[in-house]
Amino acid sequence: MIVKQFLDEPLAQYGYAIISDGEMAVIDPGRNETPYLELAEATNSRIVASCLTHPHADFVSSYWAIAQKTGAKVYASELIGLSVPYVGLKDGDEIKVGKAKLKAYLTPGHSPDSMTYVLYDEDGREYAAFTGDWLFIGDVGRADLRAKAGNIQKQREDQARDMYHSLRRMFSILKPETIVYPAHGAGTLCGKALKQFNASSIGVERMDNWAVILAHQADEKTFIEALVTGQPHVPKYFPNSVEVNRSGPKGYKEALDSVKVLGRLTAESAKAIDRNAAIVDARPASAFRQGHLRGAINIPLGKTFNTWLGTLISPTEPYYLVVSSSSAYESAISQVLAIGYESYLRGVFIGVDYTEETGPELFPRESAPKLKSDSQNYFVLDVRDPDEVSTDPILSGALHIRLSDLRERVNEVNTDKAIIVHCAGGYRSAVGSSILLAAGKKQVYDLSEAVSLLRN
Image 1: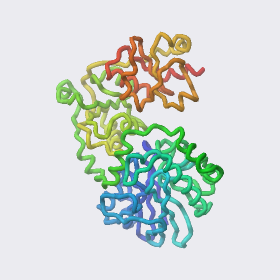
Image 2: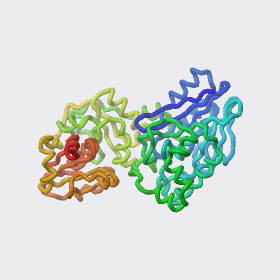
Image 3: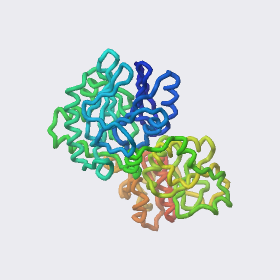
Image 4: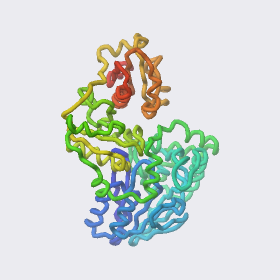
């Protein structure tokens, strides 16, 4: 028996393949189905099962594309309500994979339709649990993502209550040595305290996972309050991805072929841009400052690019994408497709020969330490999350608007003073200052990495 873990690094997302006696099952495969199909070919295996733990909010899965290309059956909870043909699983149902088997357990808490698949090897021994977003390493899935999405919708307190009982039930069923394979590692927004590991065991999580410990030591009310408190922001794309996953997403190549490449950005090509659409400039912040299209928002390409794209741009908002090179295009477009954001993408410019404005300016590094005593001469905007501000206040008197809300609240930045934007390290302040500039604000400065000088 072989278990293979696949990683989509920008979303910290894990997909899995299980191979036994010439048959293969996939669980929560990422948007690009190719690695899973290549593994099946390399091992001379037939994919017989394409499984979802739940309709994911943070990424689009290739479960349906794999089923269409291989004839595999789709498996998911009977509660999920997929729009494509699938086998609806009840608690305790089993799936044969060669000489191994997967047993499905309903584990609501993060999602009302969450299934955990427990793998038994060829000798019938309990080997691993594929927990989806129900159980992470050091954490559990957040309970506030299904109030307005999915076949079954539940408020966060009800979801947290389900999580409490799922944890108590499953940790009485599963063996301590059983491996835990989650759908995410540290870096996802589907939890708040994940650890930097890609696997664990039931025994370790029983001793070291704050939520598991609390579920066994505290009452239901205490657990619910702890779980719903302090969760990160919910990106705009999350509810949309739930529905895209339920509908049976198109294959990766088909999605890629739908993307229009518009060539280099020139004065001539800029004339064809619909200025009512958003313009997302994914070049480095330094290049954006030197020149960009008027009204563009800078979301620099990196590990969190698609998270911030799906946070700031609505899933039904038309937008253009600007990148610096062909290699940057490949990286950016894979992240766009991972969250299902190709449908409203009007086109991609690769390389820039034409710009319309400069800025925002970098705040002089040598002047940063003086802000502690001189901040009243500026309008300071802190775009960090509320929990960061409460635990690490940096500049007194700053207006706090977390970056995820800034486009909707930009009119609250109403001042004649020069505006200084800061976050914890420089990425979010680059994005935030570009949003202010796009909204027509004047004298916008990005404090960037110089924020570190205010902590000394």
